[in-house]
Amino acid sequence: MTSHGVRSILLTATYLLLLTACGGGGSAQKQPARAIQPGPDPLYALQWHLNNVGQTGGVPGMDINVMPVWGCMVGESCGESDGGLRGEGVRIAIVDDGLEVRHPDLWMNVVPGASLNFLTGGRDPTPGLIDDQDIDDPNDSHGTAVAGLVAARDFNSEGGRGVAPRAQLVGINLLKSPTLSNQASALTHDLARVAVSNNSWGATDGSGQLQPADFSWRQAIESGLQQGRNGLGTVYVWAAGNGARVWENGRAVAVDNANYDGRTNFYGVMAIGAVDHAGRKTDYSEDGANLWLVAPGGSGHCSSSLVTTDLSGPGGLNDGAKPDDLLEHPDYTRCMAGTSAATPLVSGVVALVLQARPELTWRDVRLVLAESARRHGLAASDWSSPRPGYRNPLRHSHRYGFGLVDAAAAVALAHDWALLPAQKVFPPPVSSDGPDTTRLVASPIPKGDTEGLADTLWISGSGINFIEWVDIEFASSHSYAGNLEITLTSPAGTVSRLALPHGCRNSRSGQWIADCTGAITGPDGVWRWRFGSARHLGEAADGAWTLRVVDAVDQPFSGSGDWQSWRLIIRGH
Image (tube, rainbow, N blue to C red):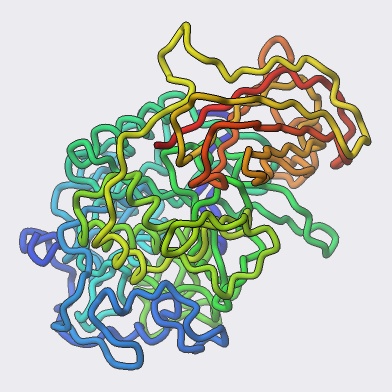
């Protein structure tokens, strides 16, 4: 396990781990203890993220707009036979701390024998089960709550429903044994059939440190992109993180950015932030030039968080001890929040999109979601200039990515989406004599100078007229990365804020530390980091790219050092 650890991203309970038929599981799945009867879902009316009518005091309509996809009309009740899409035939892996496969609201959608338990080597990832002995933690409810947001069954007289309530579910309890080999296995499990990999976990929250992804993790994602769904690619959906703010002496202090996590800033991953029931970015949700979308994630209060499945019985989030617990529904919780909660909503929308157009590649899915995302009602001052030529011109915000995921708009766009041509990478990944975008700077970064140090790279002949992603490889010997503000300006004038001044902390003790880059600093004292940016989607690659580094503020430690080099890698078509 790497030193930076992983965490499941749940606002109300953060874990520091080191941190068939009808599209469901089929009749072979062992049924839950109580009989399940057809009928309305009693908790659906509380699920504002699916249909926001102001029931929690939020803004009506500020939801993921999924009812039209199910065949329901706004303002009308939705029946089981109304047609539409509900995720049938699309398989989703819940990579988390476990999954209660016999939960009354999940069992019909769980694929029998397709899950993984890394603790036992078996196929049942239900928390608390190790060779039928209760020696695992039976209160690991995170994965079960995530699964319910994706695909809790509809019209079974149980709880609420998921975004894709007839999708297939596979549970993988990676967070119980998150070794590097297990991470690779979890992300490449059953690639031919797993269409979506939901990951509500990542680097430890609230540290401000640059926390890399291991090479084997990157290889696993690459394998999924290339081999998943028989070459169309598995879609990886990842929680952006809950570490944007920490509270100190009654004030909020900025700490994490989604670009400080080497998983969420990887080009093959969609990083998902969170908004509340009024469409405001939540205070915990991390900004980032790499942010792709936002979805409802709720707040720190159960009254405006998300309703979903919980462990059966008294365990889990709903233990009956909190005033907001659903006492009459002990197998459910109304307290699920965080980017952990937002991420499975996007995974559910991806399932609906893939049911509508199974031939979409992973790249097509990303662009469909970006172009169809909703920006109305999302307040931000940094929306990029619109890229013309689209039904919904592409714009990006560090706060909201391309906007709030919109299920109905995404499915409508997917139906007549023109498939993307093959992707180009500049410079080509294997080319010893081709163009190189590496710039050697080797200059001290001036302290207290608001202009800082800038360097410009000219690109020509890339053949990329539509950028899909930009990687920025940065090397420095600066002794405290938290002092640095790093921005990239494209030929079109779009600015990506890659790093902002912030403090770095020991997330366990809460103490501020003078080391932001220990995990990535080499013996030569130089640390190297790969930032990612989605903000240039749709722009052309050729022209002048400028990277600027400012040593602006001591946050909270002073530091100094050189900017060694930087390099661009641009993907597009």
